[in-house]
Every structure is written in structure tokens, then in C-alpha cells.
Amino acid sequence: MVAEKARRLHRIAELRERGDEPYPYRFDRSHTLGEVRGKWGELEAGTETEHEVAIAGRVMLKRDSGKLVFATVRDRSGDLQLFISKAVIGDDAFEDVKALDLGDWVGVQGTVMTTRKGELSVKASTVELLAKAIRPLPDKWHGLTDVDTRFRQRYADLMMNDEARRVFEVRHEVISSFRRTLHAEGFIEVETPVLHHEPGGAHARPFVTHHHTLDLELHLRIALELHLKRLIVGGLERVYEIGRIFRNEGISTRHNPEFTMMELYQAFADWNEMMDITERLIVQGARDAIGTTVVEIRGETVDLADPWPRMAMVDHVCETLGREVHPSQPVEDLRRLADEQEVPWEEHWGGGKLVEALFEKRCEHDIVRPTFVTGHPTEISPLARADRDDPWLTERFELFIDSREIGNGYSELNDPVEQRQRFEDEQAAKEAGDSERGTVDEDYLRALEYGMPPTGGLGIGMDRVAMLLAGVDSIKEVILFPTLRPEQEPH
Image (cartoon, rainbow, N blue to C red; front, side, top):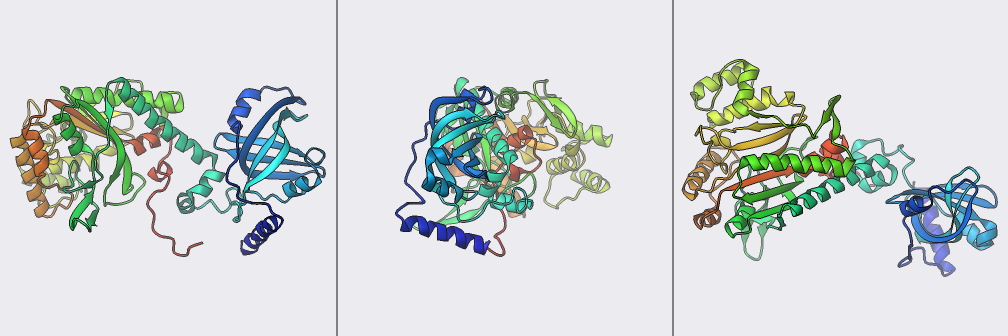
């Protein structure tokens, strides 16, 4: 590596010594490589045209055949072959082409042709070095077999790995699809603060930072919810945001400390509309991102367009354990049941939290196909309205696919008096030792006191939707730069 970098640096010095710049300011491109393929991909073998193009890309392969050089260049849209003849570009320019290294960026002007074997190519009339690569490309997968290296050096991963580029194209398309669907349904996209005085809207441990000028402790947001609902109070009626969320918690194949959420709020709606729009967003997202609603999950073929069942959390637990379970039962009884099921619990948990723990340990893993799990206990749902028929439960749902929580929504609690009591219960639980509980957000309560209409709210984890549609098992595959430990020895 050291010798190779030195050789390439010497080449840069040679070019500059003779007056050539190995890093020019710009290049006027007429076509992407994909556009060339799209327009001339059906040419018969052995065809030469007079269609002139200016293309640019990174040199990925190069083969010297005496007075001809064949090279493969790559841009975002794909690969294309260059046909470079000494007789066409001249002796000096041909020597420069031969001196190109894999990884160099080049700009090429020439005409479209196909070789005798039928390979679509650009017959170069000029080849310009656009950026000299000092570091050699990884040897295809040798050097990028380590997963941690792929995520840490995403730039190299994207250069060498077609699958990595495909995954991020899927991610882009599904987020774009969500925006189109929501725009068509009358939602306004907004932006809300990342720095919060009070961390709220979810159960999670926040990152804490300090604003020096104001001498103020602030938190990176753990949810988008409370500011978006302030906008419902203000009369915007249908709002959404797709933004980064930060939670100071563990890292796993399903969790990254920063991730992307879509949250929406719709006035005059309840949790039923939220379940409906969740289905519409993800089904349409699949059509737009991968061209089908059929995906494979754990070896099963699943059509996302099939209706998604809805089942209460307590019913899931009752059915799995073969006995009645409800958050209204005495806490001691639920603790004994948790012990029997080898489900760990903490002293400050109430019946609702114990029911959730039983569900997570004994039921969640068995959910493969899209399923709405409904009716979460009030204790774990401080922002959701109580169920119309059972005060121990709320009108809240979570969408699970492949045992992953994909979305979370509910009929929003809009009674400021009850909301204050819920916040105070959260504060008490936090002071009792639950670091993920919330606090009393006085400004949000003030907003509710102005009156918030009946409202449905929804949050969807965009990274997990991308995982589902791209068919990958780790969240790191769909985040361009996931959080990793620092390198021990910088390279």
C-alpha cells in the first residue's frame, strides 16, 4: 500500500510538472452511463455511430491490448465500456490512458458504438483525468469482506458492492414514495427542533448537550411527536416530518443511536385512520421502491397487499400463555407469572409494564406477517387516549413485521388535565429509577390548554421499512454511516 501510494503521488507530480492538473475544476457531461445504455442499448454488434457523448466515471477495469485499451467506467447509474484507440487519440494521450490507475475518475468524449462481441461502448476521442486516486481500490471483495470495514468505509463499499448501492436506492425510493402519498392526502411537511428542553414523545434515554451562550442543558430529540402536535393545536390539521431521531441506547441489528422516523398527525382522526394510512404508505412504498408488494420473510412469501390483521396485546399474551392476563390484575400475580415465564422485571414496574414485558418475551418473535398489535396498557402509553371500553388500556397500536416494530400510532390524548397526570406519573417513574421515562413538559401542556381537536398520530421507522423492502437483516445496511466504535489503528 505504501509503495503504491508513493507511485501514484509521483505520477501526480509528473503531471503537474508538465503543466497538467490532475484535479480539474469541472467537466461538462452530456449523458450518464445509464442514459447511454437506455438510448443506445439495442445497437447491433459491430455498429459504429456518429452520436457524440461526454461521459464521466471511475475506472474500475482496464485491459491493454497493444494499440487498444478497453476500460470499464462506473457512475451512479452503472457501468460502461470505453474503447480507446491509439490511432484516434494520438500517441501522447494514449500513453496517459495507459498510465491511468484503477480508481481514477475520467471524463471522456467520443462516439457511441458496439464491439464485434456486441458490447456497448464509447469510442473515445479525448480522455481527461478528473481526479487521481492515490489509494488503490479494494481488490473486489478482498479487503472488504469484514462487515465492520464495509460500514466504516462506506465510500469503498459503494464503489465495490452493487448490493450496497441497490439497498440505498430502495431506501431513497421508499422515502420519496411516502412523501408523494402524504402530499396527495393533504399533509404538510414541516421541520421541528432537534434540540429540546424536555425529552418527550417516547420512552428512551436522551443524549444531553450544553448550549454555552444560554448556559442551558438541552437534549437531542427522541421523538418528533410533541412539536408536531403543537402544530395541530395551531390549526395546521395534517402535518408530517421525516427526520433524524437520537436515542442514547444500545446498538444491535435493529437499533442505531441515530435513525430516521416519519411521524404524522391528522386532526379529526383516531387510531383506525392511522392503521389504514400505515398500510397505504408501506404498500405503495413497496410498489414504488421494488416494483412489487411481494417480499420474502424468514423463507415465507408475503404479499404486503393482503389485509393486515389486528390483535390486542393482551389477547396475544393470553393465547400464547394459555391463561388470562390483564394489567388490572394484582401486580404480585403478574410478577409471579413473569417469574414462571423467565421474564425479568423491575420493582417499580406496574401491571401494564409487566404485560408488555410478557408480550415482548413470549409473543413478539412469533409475528412474521404484518400485524397490528393493539390496546397497549395505559402505563406504557402516556400520550395515547384511554380505550373507550377499558380504562386500563389505550387506543394505541404497534405494527410488527418479522418480529420488528415498524410503526407506532394512537388516538392522541388531548385532555390537558389527564395529560398532566400522565406526565406526573412519568416523572415519578423516572425518579424511581426508570431512566427512559419522561418528564412534565409545561409548554406542551400549555398548548393543549388552548384546545387540540381529536387527532390521530403515527410514527414509522424508515430504516426498518427499508430493511424489509431491501431484504436485509441489519439496520447498519440501510444507514449510510452507522454509529461504530472509533478505529483502533487509523489507516
